[in-house]
Image (cartoon, rainbow, N blue to C red; front, side, top):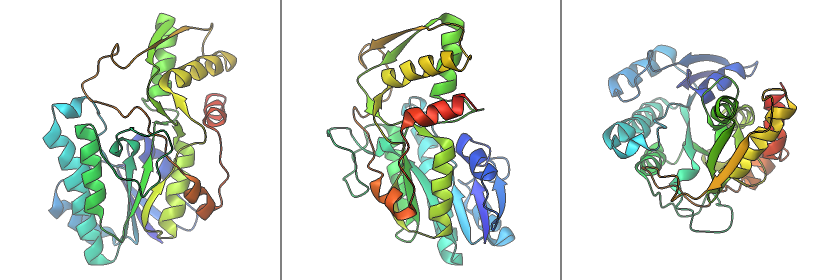
Amino acid sequence: MKAIVVGAQGQLGRELIRQIPTDVLCIGLGRAELDITDPVAVSAMMDLYRPDLVLNAAAYTAVDRAESEAACAFAINAAGVRNLAEAATERGVHLLHVSTDFVFDGETSRAYSPEDERNPLSVYGRSKAAGEDALGADGTVVRTSWVYGAGSTNFVTTMLRLMAERGEVRVVADQIGAPTWVDGLAEVIWRLGQQRLSGVWHHSDAGVASWYDFAMAIAEEGVAAGLLVSMPSVEPVTSAEFAMAARRPKFSVLDSRVTRQTLDMPAVHWRTNLRRMLFA
């Protein structure tokens, strides 16, 4: 099988490249090599490499900035996906696209299934929902949440830096979701892509947490791993106290049971994966 990873310089893209299966011939394309908002460039890429599978990890992810940069967010997250989907469909290429829990409004108290109605609250969420719609029925959507990994700027690495520098952080405690280690997400994506399993799939690590819970775990595990010299102060605050431009869902846990059952992958609690990352 020949595959292309689009967005190969991002956090997820780099992990997808690191985990290329032994029976896959794969090339990674960053933004400098491919601008997915350019349909001519996308078609030329497909004709040049003639892949069987394209994994789209390219995205506009600046949630708050998207409120004032809606055109840019939609160009990448919606029009860019449409360009990939149209070029892939014309050539019989399978396209897998990565989406987000932010397509939901968080007005529920149970984990969201892939079939649940979407109602995004932010420009970012709406742009990602539009990207899902642009994919087409034959493609694969993988929704995930709160992704982090080593060597990238994300919630875990940012918290560790701030805790070390300041000794204290203030973290929102009234938004509930599930952290997801990028290593496990990449494995799920490769398995779904290689099997060309179309439709919408969910993947996050097991368990639930608020951002405050996540930060507390980062602090405790960071001290245990020797990454922090002492336990920092972690203060819980409300979303109203921590003003942000974009509205976030209050509850955005994803139901990943069907994905795990289909791929025969055991559920791993988010704290276990956090510990694995920090102690690696």
